[in-house]
Length: 67
Image 1: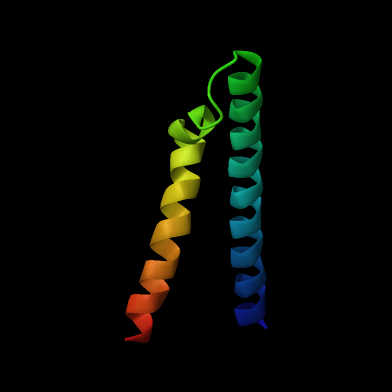
Image 2: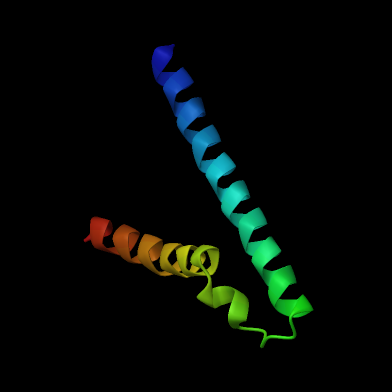
């Protein structure tokens, strides 16, 4: 019973964190567009870098774990 509870809590934490980072990134994107910056400017902010790192690191970790 407690194993399932911890699994659900862990999943909820990941989803909440992803939502927060996503919203933060969207705010930075809107700021960059309003300022007339290039389209890639939002990816050079903290949430953009976090998203890029997650998109690159997670597949590499999974690939290495399968070896």
